[in-house]
Image (cartoon, rainbow, N blue to C red; front, side, top):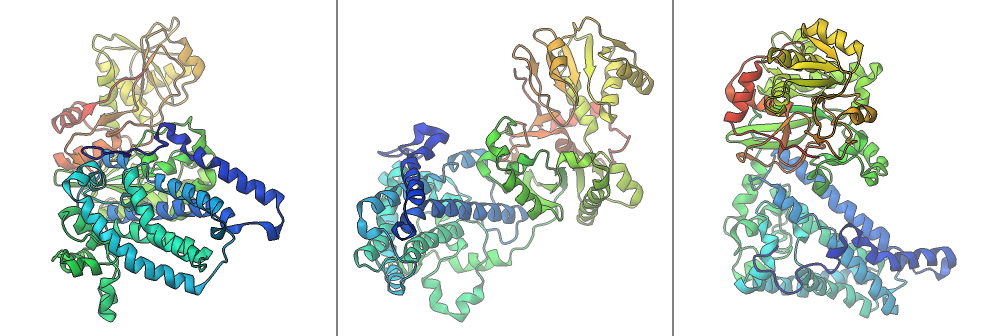
Length: 607
């Protein structure tokens, strides 16, 4: 939002929220009706192609978003080395509004202007006229409009909204108030209407021109440089007719230079070219992958829709906790499958964070949780994990992993491994223990038995807390493994339940009103009670000093990190040169004290 929002700041369909797309429904339905009822020679293909074109624009933008986020996480050729936070992601979440506006105006003009319909596929003269009208009137008028928008009156009411993003992403290019977009559309309509009026318009000139604008807008805001210097050496005049990402980046950091739309020619004419433009372009091209990270968090996809939660996917969706009730994302399984095949060959980098001078990275193994239970996939998955660990070892990183708890296997295979593998079990135990209300004397334990489960029961026993279970088999195994005294619950009066996988809805209904469910597994229990309280899976709130954190870990809230991820960070900052995987577990009290010392905090409890 601009610092002093002016007239027509909000989009007219803002009150509709996610239902804003219904504004196109009458025209879309009309085009489908025409397709079904008219003969081939009667169809207006200009009108019919508007919807596919709008969808292609959304896909075009999304591709730029994904490429930009991945490249910026790696760090190669990065221009502005600053963090992006949730505030910017929220501000830029309505990037598709401009596509909706353009679609609406296209439909209206096609309906009221007969000469704008039934256009031929190609006309060379129309393409030439479009290029000339853009290079002349559009670029020149935009330059002066842009300078006017930087006047304090218009800047504070409109353009400051766009400049709130110091670190630009491709979609930053279209984040403007509604009134500003109307002004831009009037400018870009000059070539579109010019060719229509002169009778030289074609599908290629109309759709091609908008695609050109999208491409140049996205390129100029991607925050990584890739336009080679040799391009301008071979053809020097090109530098006046095509800007670069670094050229426009200076406008966002310096504000009073580099005003041109896509052609720096007008900056040169009016003396507003930033003197450091060439130097920044050269330095960004020479910038290589930064030094190795201190910590690598190795994780994997959970459910098929979790692929949308990756930072390189849908930015606004990844910035919100995952909700399995969102059936919309389940219907997008073809996209999930496509993403799986794209990333399926090896572990890939999805996020880079900073904690002080410590660099943290998240690498994802492109396998879903269900695949870890398939024996015939074990070898392939272990190979992916092993390759990632060995790469981290070459870089000298700590590795926090929340995969298949088989870190011990890789330590045995590589006894000279310098990288330390941390699964976060000790911190998970500490989080569970500290979520139990003070004064609690008994808890009910229910869930799949694992290293973590046994460690929790053992810690509870040492704190003289009575442990009850629902089933005899659980009691026997817990008692024999941990030497703790475990009893069978008959009355279900315990108000604190420590739960893991396999907790059913019926079992939740056995608990008394006001029960506190504390999960210890990676997956949270499906909430079946409205009169009970549920903790998050073992996790902690990140300190303010942790930057560039703008995506959520699956179902965890914003700025909340899983125990495994936090544990890896703590081992690095404290300099603990030990493994924590297999059957080994770190000092629970020591790691909890370290977490609090470094600013991590307990999460809240929700109903």
